[in-house]
Image 1 (tube, rainbow, N blue to C red):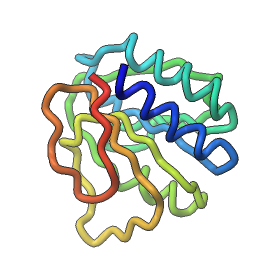
Image 2 (image 1 turned 90 degrees about the vertical axis):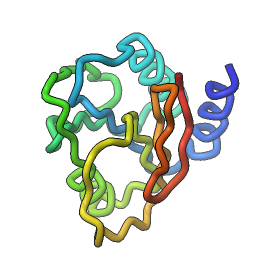
Image 3 (image 1 turned 90 degrees about the horizontal axis):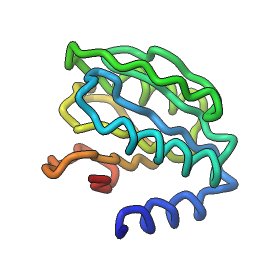
Image 4 (image 1 turned 180 degrees about the vertical axis):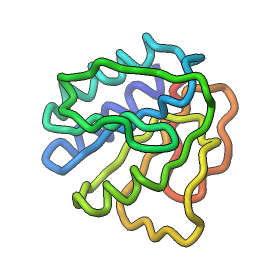
Length: 135
């Protein structure tokens, strides 16, 4: 329950800010119930947040309540488009559910706050932002 309390506190601290939740949909080998529960938490605490589904490109951007998830099994992911969209839309905080094995341009200048929500026992080093293991 430790990560749930941490995530809840991060969301409460940002309830009046622009928040987005991105989900790496490049694999269907993921704990879908965990993802659904995280989406439910976000929709209760930050109901105006955006839900971004992305793998090697953005597949959809929608309000949290429209959370029909589609997963793929190709394993290819890139964070570049999501990070660029977040910058363009002036999102204050991005929460990204991923195993952090995706690609992004090295010269990408990320000024937004990013939390990597890693649904795995192994938590790799992230290039920027903070990590929360949600497994």
